[in-house]
Image (cartoon, rainbow, N blue to C red; front, side, top):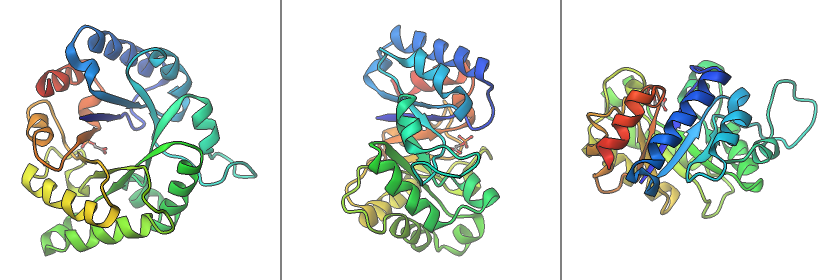
Amino acid sequence: MILAANWKMNLGVGESDKLARAIVRTVKSSRAHERSIILCPSFSALDRVGRVLRNTPLTLGAQDVFFESSGAYTGEVSPGELVELGCRFVIVGHSERRVLLGETDAMVNKKLHAAIAAGLTPILCVGEPLAVRRAGHQALYVQKQVTSALVGLRRPRILVAYEPIWAIGTGRADTPASAAAMSRVIRKAAGNVPVLYGGSVKPDNARAYLTTRGIHGALVGGASQKIETFRALLAAVA
Ligand code: PGA
C-alpha cells in the first residue's frame, strides 16, 4: 500500500518542515510505518523535508522534474539534483501542469526517460477531463496518455496515478469500482505497474480505494496537507 502526498504549492518551507516532523512522529508511534509513505513537497522545501525523513521509513518525492541533465534552462530542476536532495520518487505529468502550463505527452515522455535514467521512480499521472468522462471515452483517452508517455521505455519501473481531472480538489471522487476499471486499462497499456488512485481522497473514503483490487495506493493532495487529516488518513487505512 502506497500513500503519496502531493503538497502542491500550498506549504512554505517552514510549514513543510513542520508537517513532515509531525507526520514522522505519527508514523513512528503507530503501525503506519509498514506502509510506503512518500512526501512530495515543493522544490524549495525538498532539502529541509529530506533531512527530516533521513533514517525514517518515509521517502521523499518531487512534484516535477526537467528532462535535461544540465544546461541553459533557467528555472528548471534536473533529475540529478533531485537525487542529490534525497528524492526517490518524482511526480510526472500532473494534470495541473498539463492543463495550466501546457505540458504535452511528448514532454512527459522525455521527463520519464530522464527521471528513470537518473534512478528516480516516476509517478506518472494520467486522467481524463469531465467532457471525456461524460462522453464515456475515458478508457481510450487514458490508454493513449499512458502509451505516449511510455514510448521507448521497456518494462519501466514506474507507478501510475489515475487522477480524473474532474475529481481533483473538487470533493467529487471517482468510485472505487470505476477507478479499478481504469487501473485495468492502465495495466494493459503499461504492464504490471502499481496503480494509485488520486482525486479527492479523504479520510472517509480512503479505505474503500485501498481495499479495492487493482488499486495499490493513493496520491493525495488536500487531505495530506494538514496533520489532522493526514493522521485520519493513516488511521483509516491502518
Ligand atoms: P486532491 O489532489 O487530493 O486535493 O484532490 C490530488 C492530486 O492532485 O494529486
